[in-house]
Length: 503
Image (cartoon, rainbow, N blue to C red; front, side):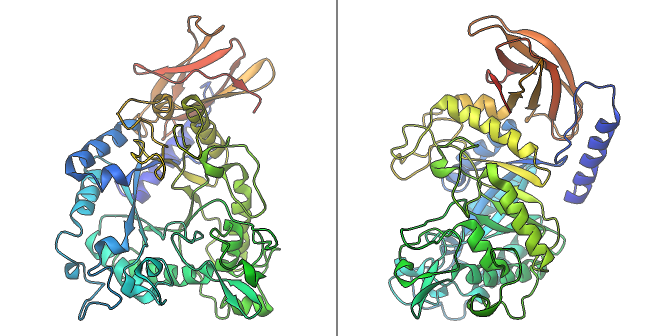
Protein backbone atom coordinates (compact mmCIF):
# COMPACT_ATOMS: atom_id res chain seq x y z
CA UNK A 1 0.00 0.00 0.00
CA UNK A 2 1.35 3.45 -0.87
CA UNK A 3 1.81 6.14 1.78
CA UNK A 4 -1.08 8.13 0.30
CA UNK A 5 -3.48 5.21 0.28
CA UNK A 6 -2.38 4.15 3.75
CA UNK A 7 -3.05 7.60 5.15
CA UNK A 8 -6.43 7.71 3.36
CA UNK A 9 -7.37 4.31 4.80
CA UNK A 10 -6.39 5.41 8.27
CA UNK A 11 -8.47 8.56 8.02
CA UNK A 12 -11.48 6.55 6.83
CA UNK A 13 -11.10 4.16 9.74
CA UNK A 14 -10.71 7.03 12.17
CA UNK A 15 -13.79 8.74 10.75
CA UNK A 16 -15.77 5.52 11.10
CA UNK A 17 -14.69 5.34 14.72
CA UNK A 18 -15.87 8.89 15.34
CA UNK A 19 -19.28 8.07 13.93
CA UNK A 20 -19.69 5.03 16.14
CA UNK A 21 -21.06 7.09 19.00
CA UNK A 22 -22.35 4.06 20.83
CA UNK A 23 -18.86 2.79 21.45
CA UNK A 24 -17.42 3.68 24.84
CA UNK A 25 -13.90 4.17 23.51
CA UNK A 26 -13.02 7.43 21.81
CA UNK A 27 -11.01 7.04 18.60
CA UNK A 28 -7.63 8.61 17.92
CA UNK A 29 -8.82 12.18 17.36
CA UNK A 30 -5.47 13.96 17.64
CA UNK A 31 -3.52 12.45 14.74
CA UNK A 32 -5.34 9.49 13.20
CA UNK A 33 -2.28 8.52 11.20
CA UNK A 34 0.24 8.91 14.06
CA UNK A 35 3.03 6.41 13.52
CA UNK A 36 5.53 4.67 15.80
CA UNK A 37 9.21 4.87 14.81
CA UNK A 38 12.16 2.86 16.11
CA UNK A 39 15.85 3.58 15.51
CA UNK A 40 18.84 1.40 16.41
CA UNK A 41 21.74 1.63 13.93
CA UNK A 42 23.97 -0.42 16.22
CA UNK A 43 21.80 -3.48 15.63
CA UNK A 44 20.45 -2.68 12.20
CA UNK A 45 23.56 -1.42 10.38
CA UNK A 46 26.69 -2.08 12.43
CA UNK A 47 26.39 -5.63 13.80
CA UNK A 48 26.07 -7.82 10.72
CA UNK A 49 23.18 -9.38 8.79
CA UNK A 50 22.00 -11.78 11.52
CA UNK A 51 21.67 -9.05 14.15
CA UNK A 52 20.03 -6.82 11.56
CA UNK A 53 17.37 -9.39 10.70
CA UNK A 54 16.68 -10.10 14.37
CA UNK A 55 16.35 -6.39 15.14
CA UNK A 56 13.94 -5.82 12.26
CA UNK A 57 11.86 -8.79 13.43
CA UNK A 58 11.79 -7.37 16.93
CA UNK A 59 10.87 -3.87 15.77
CA UNK A 60 7.94 -5.33 13.86
CA UNK A 61 6.85 -7.36 16.90
CA UNK A 62 7.06 -4.27 19.10
CA UNK A 63 4.62 -2.50 16.80
CA UNK A 64 6.83 -0.10 14.88
CA UNK A 65 5.50 1.41 11.66
CA UNK A 66 8.71 3.14 10.60
CA UNK A 67 12.42 2.36 10.98
CA UNK A 68 14.93 5.21 10.86
CA UNK A 69 18.62 5.16 9.99
CA UNK A 70 21.22 7.91 9.82
CA UNK A 71 23.02 7.49 6.49
CA UNK A 72 26.44 8.91 7.34
CA UNK A 73 28.12 10.34 4.25
CA UNK A 74 31.71 9.54 5.23
CA UNK A 75 30.90 5.85 5.67
CA UNK A 76 29.98 5.54 2.00
CA UNK A 77 32.35 7.99 0.33
CA UNK A 78 35.69 6.96 -1.21
CA UNK A 79 38.87 8.16 0.55
CA UNK A 80 36.93 9.80 3.40
CA UNK A 81 40.07 10.95 5.25
CA UNK A 82 41.68 12.53 2.19
CA UNK A 83 41.46 16.30 1.85
CA UNK A 84 41.38 15.96 -1.92
CA UNK A 85 38.34 14.65 -3.74
CA UNK A 86 39.15 11.45 -5.68
CA UNK A 87 39.82 12.25 -9.31
CA UNK A 88 36.86 11.56 -11.57
CA UNK A 89 34.52 10.58 -8.73
CA UNK A 90 30.87 11.20 -9.63
CA UNK A 91 29.08 11.49 -6.30
CA UNK A 92 25.59 11.35 -7.75
CA UNK A 93 26.19 7.90 -9.27
CA UNK A 94 25.68 5.11 -6.69
CA UNK A 95 27.84 2.79 -8.81
CA UNK A 96 30.82 5.11 -8.29
CA UNK A 97 31.01 4.39 -4.55
CA UNK A 98 33.38 1.72 -3.18
CA UNK A 99 32.24 -1.87 -3.61
CA UNK A 100 30.22 -3.06 -0.64
CA UNK A 101 29.53 0.44 0.69
CA UNK A 102 25.79 0.00 0.50
CA UNK A 103 25.54 -3.69 1.43
CA UNK A 104 24.11 -3.29 4.94
CA UNK A 105 21.92 -0.35 3.97
CA UNK A 106 20.57 -2.34 1.02
CA UNK A 107 19.56 -5.23 3.27
CA UNK A 108 18.21 -2.81 5.88
CA UNK A 109 15.86 -1.21 3.35
CA UNK A 110 14.84 -4.50 1.73
CA UNK A 111 14.42 -6.28 5.07
CA UNK A 112 12.31 -3.53 6.60
CA UNK A 113 10.04 -3.27 3.60
CA UNK A 114 9.64 -7.06 3.40
CA UNK A 115 8.26 -6.89 6.95
CA UNK A 116 5.81 -4.14 6.10
CA UNK A 117 7.90 -1.44 7.79
CA UNK A 118 8.42 1.96 6.22
CA UNK A 119 11.96 3.31 6.04
CA UNK A 120 13.13 6.81 6.97
CA UNK A 121 16.63 7.62 5.72
CA UNK A 122 18.40 10.65 7.18
CA UNK A 123 21.24 11.79 4.92
CA UNK A 124 23.81 13.35 7.22
CA UNK A 125 27.42 13.98 8.20
CA UNK A 126 30.05 13.38 9.35
CA UNK A 127 31.40 14.12 5.91
CA UNK A 128 34.43 13.02 3.90
CA UNK A 129 37.28 15.45 4.51
CA UNK A 130 37.34 16.43 0.83
CA UNK A 131 33.76 17.71 1.07
CA UNK A 132 34.62 20.39 3.66
CA UNK A 133 35.23 24.04 2.84
CA UNK A 134 37.36 24.45 5.97
CA UNK A 135 41.05 24.13 6.65
CA UNK A 136 42.51 22.05 9.46
CA UNK A 137 42.76 18.48 10.67
CA UNK A 138 40.64 15.66 9.30
CA UNK A 139 38.88 15.54 12.68
CA UNK A 140 37.90 19.19 12.24
CA UNK A 141 36.83 18.80 8.63
CA UNK A 142 34.37 15.96 9.27
CA UNK A 143 31.64 18.42 10.34
CA UNK A 144 32.96 21.76 9.09
CA UNK A 145 31.18 23.70 6.33
CA UNK A 146 30.05 20.84 4.08
CA UNK A 147 29.90 21.66 0.38
CA UNK A 148 26.15 21.77 -0.43
CA UNK A 149 26.69 20.76 -4.05
CA UNK A 150 28.67 17.67 -3.07
CA UNK A 151 26.09 16.79 -0.42
CA UNK A 152 23.35 17.13 -3.01
CA UNK A 153 25.22 14.66 -5.20
CA UNK A 154 25.36 12.16 -2.32
CA UNK A 155 21.61 12.55 -1.77
CA UNK A 156 21.05 12.02 -5.49
CA UNK A 157 22.97 8.76 -5.23
CA UNK A 158 20.73 7.66 -2.36
CA UNK A 159 17.59 8.70 -4.22
CA UNK A 160 18.68 6.74 -7.27
CA UNK A 161 19.66 3.64 -5.33
CA UNK A 162 16.53 3.52 -3.17
CA UNK A 163 13.50 4.27 -5.37
CA UNK A 164 11.15 2.47 -2.95
CA UNK A 165 12.08 4.59 0.09
CA UNK A 166 9.36 7.20 0.57
CA UNK A 167 10.49 8.99 3.73
CA UNK A 168 13.61 11.19 3.90
CA UNK A 169 15.05 13.74 6.30
CA UNK A 170 17.99 16.09 6.05
CA UNK A 171 20.98 16.06 8.43
CA UNK A 172 21.00 14.83 12.00
CA UNK A 173 20.96 17.48 14.76
CA UNK A 174 22.35 20.34 12.66
CA UNK A 175 22.14 22.69 15.66
CA UNK A 176 24.92 20.74 17.42
CA UNK A 177 28.59 21.41 16.68
CA UNK A 178 29.30 17.67 16.85
CA UNK A 179 27.21 17.27 13.67
CA UNK A 180 27.61 20.62 11.88
CA UNK A 181 30.23 23.28 12.53
CA UNK A 182 30.85 26.02 13.25
CA UNK A 183 27.67 26.94 15.06
CA UNK A 184 28.85 30.52 15.55
CA UNK A 185 31.76 32.28 13.83
CA UNK A 186 33.50 35.55 14.62
CA UNK A 187 32.65 38.52 12.44
CA UNK A 188 34.28 41.76 13.52
CA UNK A 189 33.55 42.39 17.18
CA UNK A 190 30.77 39.80 17.33
CA UNK A 191 30.06 36.15 16.71
CA UNK A 192 27.36 35.34 14.16
CA UNK A 193 25.19 32.24 13.95
CA UNK A 194 26.45 30.24 10.94
CA UNK A 195 25.05 26.71 11.05
CA UNK A 196 21.51 27.84 10.18
CA UNK A 197 22.50 29.22 6.78
CA UNK A 198 24.73 26.22 6.13
CA UNK A 199 21.80 23.98 6.91
CA UNK A 200 19.47 25.91 4.62
CA UNK A 201 21.96 25.42 1.78
CA UNK A 202 22.30 21.70 2.54
CA UNK A 203 18.53 21.28 2.72
CA UNK A 204 17.97 23.11 -0.56
CA UNK A 205 20.51 20.90 -2.29
CA UNK A 206 19.11 17.70 -0.75
CA UNK A 207 15.54 18.56 -1.70
CA UNK A 208 16.62 19.16 -5.29
CA UNK A 209 18.52 15.87 -5.27
CA UNK A 210 15.48 13.92 -4.12
CA UNK A 211 13.05 15.69 -6.42
CA UNK A 212 15.42 15.04 -9.31
CA UNK A 213 15.56 11.28 -8.72
CA UNK A 214 11.89 10.38 -8.68
CA UNK A 215 11.05 11.30 -5.07
CA UNK A 216 9.04 14.45 -5.76
CA UNK A 217 5.91 12.97 -4.13
CA UNK A 218 7.77 11.54 -1.12
CA UNK A 219 7.79 12.67 2.49
CA UNK A 220 10.79 15.01 2.85
CA UNK A 221 11.34 16.31 6.37
CA UNK A 222 13.35 19.28 7.50
CA UNK A 223 15.05 19.58 10.86
CA UNK A 224 16.08 16.53 12.89
CA UNK A 225 16.96 19.18 15.46
CA UNK A 226 18.22 18.56 18.98
CA UNK A 227 16.04 20.09 21.73
CA UNK A 228 18.46 22.08 23.88
CA UNK A 229 21.02 24.87 23.61
CA UNK A 230 24.06 26.32 25.33
CA UNK A 231 23.95 29.67 27.10
CA UNK A 232 27.44 30.44 28.42
CA UNK A 233 27.69 33.32 30.86
CA UNK A 234 27.47 36.67 29.12
CA UNK A 235 26.42 35.24 25.76
CA UNK A 236 22.58 35.35 25.69
CA UNK A 237 22.87 32.54 23.15
CA UNK A 238 19.47 30.98 23.75
CA UNK A 239 17.77 33.74 21.78
CA UNK A 240 20.43 35.58 19.77
CA UNK A 241 21.74 35.19 16.23
CA UNK A 242 24.55 37.59 17.21
CA UNK A 243 26.55 37.17 20.43
CA UNK A 244 29.78 38.63 21.85
CA UNK A 245 32.92 37.53 20.01
CA UNK A 246 34.20 35.61 23.04
CA UNK A 247 31.22 33.26 22.78
CA UNK A 248 31.96 31.79 19.34
CA UNK A 249 33.96 28.84 20.63
CA UNK A 250 31.81 28.31 23.72
CA UNK A 251 28.53 27.47 22.02
CA UNK A 252 28.41 23.77 21.22
CA UNK A 253 24.62 23.67 20.89
CA UNK A 254 22.40 26.32 19.36
CA UNK A 255 18.92 26.28 20.83
CA UNK A 256 16.45 24.98 18.22
CA UNK A 257 14.39 28.17 18.34
CA UNK A 258 17.40 30.37 17.56
CA UNK A 259 18.67 27.92 14.95
CA UNK A 260 15.32 27.85 13.16
CA UNK A 261 14.99 31.61 13.24
CA UNK A 262 18.25 31.62 11.29
CA UNK A 263 17.08 28.90 8.91
CA UNK A 264 13.80 30.72 8.24
CA UNK A 265 15.17 34.29 8.53
CA UNK A 266 12.78 35.33 11.29
CA UNK A 267 13.19 37.73 14.19
CA UNK A 268 12.14 37.03 17.77
CA UNK A 269 8.61 38.25 16.97
CA UNK A 270 8.22 35.80 14.11
CA UNK A 271 8.55 38.42 11.38
CA UNK A 272 11.07 38.49 8.53
CA UNK A 273 14.60 39.46 9.50
CA UNK A 274 15.83 42.86 8.37
CA UNK A 275 19.07 44.79 8.52
CA UNK A 276 22.40 43.33 9.59
CA UNK A 277 20.92 40.06 10.87
CA UNK A 278 19.22 39.49 7.51
CA UNK A 279 22.57 40.07 5.82
CA UNK A 280 24.28 37.67 8.24
CA UNK A 281 21.77 34.93 7.39
CA UNK A 282 21.77 35.57 3.61
CA UNK A 283 18.03 36.22 3.61
CA UNK A 284 17.83 38.08 0.30
CA UNK A 285 15.98 36.16 -2.39
CA UNK A 286 14.86 33.47 0.08
CA UNK A 287 13.65 30.37 -1.74
CA UNK A 288 10.82 28.45 -0.12
CA UNK A 289 11.80 25.05 1.30
CA UNK A 290 9.32 22.59 -0.19
CA UNK A 291 9.18 19.97 2.53
CA UNK A 292 6.30 17.90 3.88
CA UNK A 293 7.13 17.70 7.59
CA UNK A 294 9.43 18.82 10.39
CA UNK A 295 11.49 16.25 12.31
CA UNK A 296 12.55 16.94 15.89
CA UNK A 297 14.16 15.12 18.84
CA UNK A 298 12.13 16.26 21.88
CA UNK A 299 14.40 14.87 24.64
CA UNK A 300 14.43 16.40 28.09
CA UNK A 301 17.86 17.41 29.41
CA UNK A 302 20.15 14.39 29.42
CA UNK A 303 17.19 12.19 28.57
CA UNK A 304 16.78 11.96 32.32
CA UNK A 305 14.17 14.49 33.38
CA UNK A 306 10.40 13.94 33.42
CA UNK A 307 8.51 14.81 30.23
CA UNK A 308 6.85 17.79 31.92
CA UNK A 309 10.07 19.30 33.32
CA UNK A 310 10.85 22.96 32.64
CA UNK A 311 13.18 24.21 29.94
CA UNK A 312 15.18 27.32 29.16
CA UNK A 313 14.30 29.98 26.63
CA UNK A 314 14.72 28.78 23.06
CA UNK A 315 14.61 25.09 23.92
CA UNK A 316 11.94 22.69 22.63
CA UNK A 317 11.19 19.49 24.52
CA UNK A 318 8.06 17.37 24.26
CA UNK A 319 6.24 19.44 26.87
CA UNK A 320 6.70 22.74 25.00
CA UNK A 321 6.00 21.62 21.44
CA UNK A 322 3.83 24.72 21.10
CA UNK A 323 7.07 26.67 20.66
CA UNK A 324 7.86 24.61 17.59
CA UNK A 325 4.32 24.86 16.23
CA UNK A 326 4.37 28.65 16.58
CA UNK A 327 7.75 28.90 14.89
CA UNK A 328 6.70 26.71 11.96
CA UNK A 329 3.47 28.67 11.55
CA UNK A 330 5.37 31.97 11.53
CA UNK A 331 7.75 30.54 8.93
CA UNK A 332 4.79 29.49 6.79
CA UNK A 333 3.29 32.99 7.02
CA UNK A 334 6.63 34.34 5.80
CA UNK A 335 6.47 31.92 2.83
CA UNK A 336 9.54 30.00 4.03
CA UNK A 337 7.82 26.59 4.22
CA UNK A 338 4.37 25.13 3.45
CA UNK A 339 1.58 25.80 5.94
CA UNK A 340 0.63 23.46 8.78
CA UNK A 341 3.62 21.15 8.51
CA UNK A 342 3.18 18.02 10.64
CA UNK A 343 5.70 17.43 13.41
CA UNK A 344 7.56 14.14 13.35
CA UNK A 345 9.36 13.02 16.52
CA UNK A 346 12.12 10.89 15.03
CA UNK A 347 14.45 10.33 18.00
CA UNK A 348 13.45 10.19 21.66
CA UNK A 349 13.92 8.23 24.85
CA UNK A 350 15.20 8.13 28.42
CA UNK A 351 18.60 7.13 29.71
CA UNK A 352 18.56 4.52 32.46
CA UNK A 353 21.16 3.74 35.07
CA UNK A 354 24.00 2.65 35.00
CA UNK A 355 24.65 5.55 32.61
CA UNK A 356 27.58 7.34 34.22
CA UNK A 357 26.25 10.88 33.73
CA UNK A 358 22.49 10.70 33.42
CA UNK A 359 19.95 8.05 34.20
CA UNK A 360 16.50 7.36 35.57
CA UNK A 361 15.30 4.12 37.12
CA UNK A 362 13.95 1.40 34.86
CA UNK A 363 10.46 2.00 36.24
CA UNK A 364 10.70 5.72 35.53
CA UNK A 365 11.78 5.02 31.95
CA UNK A 366 8.65 2.93 31.40
CA UNK A 367 6.43 5.59 32.95
CA UNK A 368 8.00 8.45 30.97
CA UNK A 369 7.67 6.60 27.66
CA UNK A 370 3.94 6.23 28.28
CA UNK A 371 3.55 9.80 29.51
CA UNK A 372 5.29 11.16 26.42
CA UNK A 373 3.00 9.08 24.20
CA UNK A 374 0.02 10.67 25.96
CA UNK A 375 1.44 14.18 25.52
CA UNK A 376 2.14 13.54 21.84
CA UNK A 377 -1.33 12.08 21.31
CA UNK A 378 -2.92 15.31 22.54
CA UNK A 379 -1.03 17.39 19.97
CA UNK A 380 -2.80 17.19 16.59
CA UNK A 381 0.36 18.27 14.75
CA UNK A 382 2.42 15.29 15.93
CA UNK A 383 2.31 12.52 13.34
CA UNK A 384 5.24 10.37 14.52
CA UNK A 385 6.54 9.26 17.94
CA UNK A 386 9.93 7.64 18.39
CA UNK A 387 11.89 5.16 20.48
CA UNK A 388 15.67 5.44 20.22
CA UNK A 389 17.32 2.09 20.82
CA UNK A 390 16.01 -1.42 21.24
CA UNK A 391 19.08 -2.54 23.22
CA UNK A 392 21.42 -0.50 25.44
CA UNK A 393 24.85 0.41 24.10
CA UNK A 394 27.85 -1.49 25.41
CA UNK A 395 29.80 1.68 26.17
CA UNK A 396 28.36 2.98 29.43
CA UNK A 397 30.54 6.10 29.43
CA UNK A 398 29.89 7.30 25.87
CA UNK A 399 26.91 5.29 24.63
CA UNK A 400 23.20 5.46 25.26
CA UNK A 401 21.30 3.35 27.78
CA UNK A 402 17.91 4.14 26.28
CA UNK A 403 17.07 0.64 25.11
CA UNK A 404 13.98 -1.36 25.89
CA UNK A 405 16.32 -4.22 26.74
CA UNK A 406 19.59 -4.40 28.65
CA UNK A 407 22.80 -5.26 26.85
CA UNK A 408 22.45 -8.87 28.06
CA UNK A 409 19.06 -9.10 26.36
CA UNK A 410 16.88 -8.92 29.46
CA UNK A 411 13.80 -6.76 28.93
CA UNK A 412 13.39 -3.65 31.04
CA UNK A 413 9.93 -2.62 32.26
CA UNK A 414 9.95 -0.26 29.27
CA UNK A 415 9.61 -3.24 26.93
CA UNK A 416 6.05 -4.01 28.02
CA UNK A 417 5.31 -0.31 28.43
CA UNK A 418 6.27 0.38 24.84
CA UNK A 419 4.12 -2.44 23.48
CA UNK A 420 1.04 -1.44 25.47
CA UNK A 421 1.21 2.22 26.51
CA UNK A 422 -1.14 3.27 29.29
CA UNK A 423 -1.74 6.62 30.95
CA UNK A 424 -4.53 7.21 33.45
CA UNK A 425 -5.44 10.77 34.38
CA UNK A 426 -8.13 12.70 36.21
CA UNK A 427 -9.14 14.07 39.60
CA UNK A 428 -12.84 13.36 40.00
CA UNK A 429 -15.16 10.38 40.05
CA UNK A 430 -14.10 9.38 36.54
CA UNK A 431 -10.65 9.01 35.01
CA UNK A 432 -9.47 8.99 31.41
CA UNK A 433 -7.58 5.91 30.31
CA UNK A 434 -5.32 6.40 27.30
CA UNK A 435 -3.74 3.38 25.69
CA UNK A 436 -2.43 1.86 22.50
CA UNK A 437 -2.25 -1.67 21.14
CA UNK A 438 1.00 -0.96 19.35
CA UNK A 439 1.68 -4.47 17.96
CA UNK A 440 -1.84 -4.83 16.52
CA UNK A 441 -2.12 -4.76 12.75
CA UNK A 442 -3.04 -1.25 11.67
CA UNK A 443 -6.70 -0.84 10.88
CA UNK A 444 -7.91 -4.09 12.46
CA UNK A 445 -10.71 -4.07 15.02
CA UNK A 446 -9.50 -5.08 18.48
CA UNK A 447 -10.69 -5.10 22.08
CA UNK A 448 -8.72 -4.52 25.27
CA UNK A 449 -9.50 -5.16 28.93
CA UNK A 450 -9.02 -2.31 31.38
CA UNK A 451 -8.15 -3.78 34.74
CA UNK A 452 -7.77 -2.31 38.22
CA UNK A 453 -6.36 -3.44 41.56
CA UNK A 454 -7.16 -1.99 44.96
CA UNK A 455 -3.52 -1.92 46.04
CA UNK A 456 -0.07 -3.25 45.22
CA UNK A 457 -0.16 -7.03 45.29
CA UNK A 458 -3.95 -7.23 45.06
CA UNK A 459 -5.64 -9.10 42.23
CA UNK A 460 -6.51 -7.20 39.06
CA UNK A 461 -10.11 -7.25 37.90
CA UNK A 462 -11.48 -6.24 34.51
CA UNK A 463 -13.73 -3.19 34.84
CA UNK A 464 -14.36 -2.59 31.16
CA UNK A 465 -13.66 -4.26 27.82
CA UNK A 466 -13.09 -1.57 25.24
CA UNK A 467 -13.46 -1.97 21.47
CA UNK A 468 -10.57 -0.32 19.62
CA UNK A 469 -11.22 0.73 16.04
CA UNK A 470 -8.69 3.48 15.37
CA UNK A 471 -6.18 2.80 12.62
CA UNK A 472 -3.16 2.90 14.92
CA UNK A 473 -4.66 1.07 17.92
CA UNK A 474 -4.91 4.19 20.07
CA UNK A 475 -7.93 4.72 22.31
CA UNK A 476 -9.14 6.89 25.17
CA UNK A 477 -12.07 6.08 27.41
CA UNK A 478 -13.64 7.57 30.52
CA UNK A 479 -14.30 5.08 33.33
CA UNK A 480 -15.21 5.33 37.03
CA UNK A 481 -12.22 5.85 39.29
CA UNK A 482 -12.44 2.49 41.04
CA UNK A 483 -8.89 1.43 41.89
CA UNK A 484 -5.35 2.37 42.84
CA UNK A 485 -3.43 0.57 40.10
CA UNK A 486 -4.46 0.25 36.46
CA UNK A 487 -3.29 -1.89 33.59
CA UNK A 488 -4.28 -3.10 30.13
CA UNK A 489 -4.66 -6.74 29.13
CA UNK A 490 -4.67 -7.65 25.44
CA UNK A 491 -3.84 -10.74 23.44
CA UNK A 492 -1.95 -12.37 26.32
CA UNK A 493 0.05 -9.22 27.09
CA UNK A 494 -0.24 -6.85 30.03
CA UNK A 495 0.92 -3.27 30.31
CA UNK A 496 2.83 -1.71 33.18
CA UNK A 497 0.84 -0.94 36.33
CA UNK A 498 -0.11 2.72 36.30
CA UNK A 499 -1.27 5.04 39.04
CA UNK A 500 -3.68 7.90 38.36
CA UNK A 501 -1.99 11.15 37.34
CA UNK A 502 -3.67 14.54 37.79
CA UNK A 503 -3.26 15.20 34.06
